[in-house]
Image (cartoon, rainbow, N blue to C red; front, side):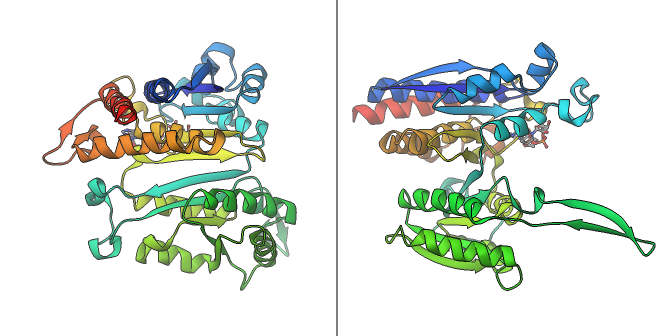
Length: 366
Ligand code: NAD
């Protein structure tokens, strides 16, 4: 079967890491009999250079035609780049907001997985890490406090600012369905995080999540207050499988969860709309400080491609083949410079991509 992928290499290290992810995808295609076709579009600084805007309508229309989008990263050196001498809506990162809005991506998924081989980079104590952790944070992306009405006014001579946190039941239901669907492909355990002891929006959140849970009898649902969740993430991260939460709580908790993995070059992410379509990207930025040097870690992007196979194309076996290949390459001691440790063998971006692709090929034969 042929899968249509739109790639957005973007800026900085983006082209290097997307190239390696496509190389691994091509190997999956060859080994498992699939065809992945790529259409490249410009977004970010490279689009500004070519068209004067970070994302053209044509590029967005092309992305809408795809089965999935694979993004590297956009943006340059913020303090020292001509891309930032313009209004915020014309800067590279405005392309990200435009594509998320244009594709109606309301659900963000960020896995936090600790590789045994990288446990030394985890800031938590060994007794807390235990057997490691493997969770995903499902964050609502288009509602809540960041999108509610806001204003600042003077009341009786005192400045007062108001932000509103609004959710309707449909917005909650669609992200909850995504989270339960993803739980069905994992360990079937959802922890829904809210502040239902205080907030009305959280009480509605809880009610709707419980309604959705009835359609997934195999999935265990628990509720956790957000302050407790922030503590539990650093006290017992192994308890989490799928964490489902609203926009602002998810913003904070997903950063906390990624920090405890200790390695930014390993963290993948995905954003979804109501269909199987997804936009897949590493959690890190365009790292202009190391761009073009063949030293960036391509693994976050390669793992994002694995997520694409699993969640947009339902190619679970092929996704697992990439994840196993990454695991084996790490176990053999291959490292890019960002995750280098004593006794390991340092390789660059291209070589790391090649090693992972070779593992995919070898494992498919065995
Ligand atoms: P960054 O994630 O690009 O880099 C932070 C640090 O981590 C840097 O030292 C960088 O060299 C390192 N790093 C990041 N990814 C790496 C990788 N794969 N391998 C090895 N090292 C890696 O964050 P930043 O420096 O704050 O931002 C740089 C640019 O990226 C800015 O223009 C910012 O706006 C943009 N940005 C884009 C996205 C996106 O496209 N989704 C996300 C975040 C930041």
